[in-house]
Structure formats: C-alpha cells, structure tokens
Image 1 (cartoon, rainbow, N blue to C red):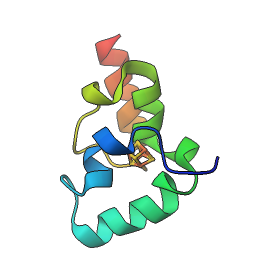
Image 2 (cartoon, rainbow, N blue to C red):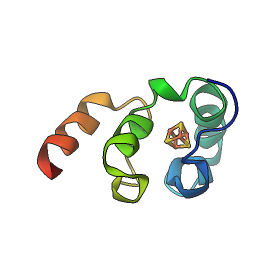
Image 3 (spheres, helix red, strand yellow):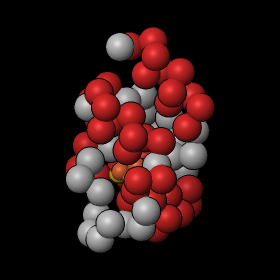
Image 4 (tube, helix red, strand yellow):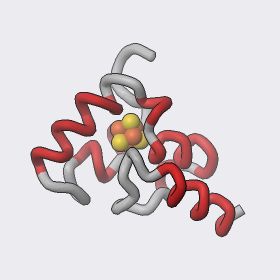
Length: 73
Ligand code: SF4
C-alpha cells in the first residue's frame, strides 16, 4: 500500500507519544509509510477504531492485539 497510514494523525506510535523517538522513526519507516498491513496497531484499528487501540501496543505485537480484540468484542 502506498502513502501514509490512514490512522497516522491519531496514532500514538506515529506521533512518538508512546515510544522513544528513534523507535518511532523506525516504525514510521517500516510500517506507517511502508507495509501498514503488517502493523498490529493497524489491524486492531481497522477492527475497532484507532481511538480504542492502547497507546502502548507496538506494531509487532500481533498476539497482544488479538488478545485485546477478543476482550473488547
Ligand atoms: S503504527 Fe501502525 S496504525 Fe499507527 S500510523 Fe503506523 S502503521 Fe498506522
């Protein structure tokens, strides 16, 4: 997918609020402007909305995202 992730303006990781600046840079490069379909935050946001995604969920934490989804649906 091209372009920047559609959740970027409301995403804590993209904004660097919940991770260190160097980590935010790497995540933006790899996921947000790269393969966002590989991002656990993107998958969870697509299911329940970015507002409900925990700020500290990291893009590679797919198992945690799945557990969270099971709890909230
Ligand atoms: S961390 Fe994931 S959900 Fe957030 S802007 Fe990047 S790709 Fe989108």
